[in-house]
Length: 431
Ligand code: SPQ
Image (cartoon, rainbow, N blue to C red):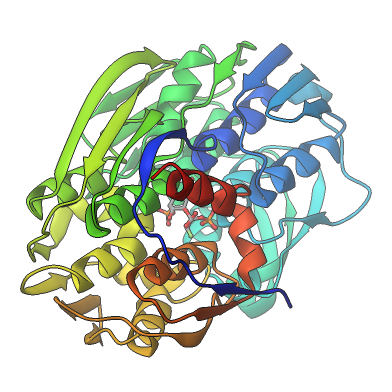
């Protein structure tokens, strides 16, 4: 297993960078480009391992997909051109590939076997297999289809009116995509709005769908029309440097061309609520996704309580928000975030254990954590536990101590941010 020793003498971050393409949008661009008849070109695609798993899945179904760096070209004969794969599909570490793909596969008259790595094999799949079974998909797997590996036989789906019990964009998207493969109208309703990239991109591919508050309605059997997609920078990746600049001395950075979809910008709201010096300029909108620049300067953050509807808008940023809170004045409380338990790791446990090792006063609650501010961090030997967001949280934490921090399994950072350490170095070397 890889190991990195993190030790930085100079910790001021300055300059401009752009971050890699958004992971959620990159996955969806490959999926919808493969379902659409014709040629789709994707620019600024995330070359992370998760999105490469999505490409491989559609290649296994006969779609011609070529990638040259961050540009992906897809030439597809549409849904009718998809073939039964001859081998099981490897989903790697990617929950998004698993849940969205199952929605699509449920509409195809073939047999599929799906498996993933150790982490994905522990993550709950019943949240998506339950509605897909209700729509008529034949699904079996470990623990009656709750866990991978899963086998699925699709075809002859019925539309559904589904009120989802979990705050999950993956579940909403999987059901919408299955709905696209039925005769009739599928309705998906959620209590709290989750990221809406599926809805935005389906519209860009010409689909007829309506959104009324937290309810999405989609007509089945609609052919998608190929189109070109430019992927915005991933705000979940940018978040690590936004927080780093807020808590290291004399820092001043701008991250350019970041996706500013309101279902994802909770990190900006949290930084503002904590009194960070942050400004945002929206520049343009592409495929329904606003894009702009975010500037952050060093400040003295204040503690807050974070709960309720903002949680899905910061769900992937909570590890780095916990580190931010450890440097704030006062006690920060994060509630209503029980979904963290179902990520690449149980992120309540892995964040709390790791930050404790580094000297932070933090305790886990059933649905979140309580973080005391004003901590002085020290060196330790830490683990990413194979979770890219824990690995990046540790790397930013290492800017807060002169002692060195060992990070075991740092390579998993490539899941969502292959050039993370190069970008960190470039911001550090400008000072
Ligand atoms: O794809 P995966 O492994 O689930 O990735 C994560 C991440 O941290 O990158 C979660 F672990 O992001 C999810 C996110 O938490 C990506 C996603 C999407 O693209 O639809 C939605 C969120 O998950 P959920 O549970 O809301 O469906």
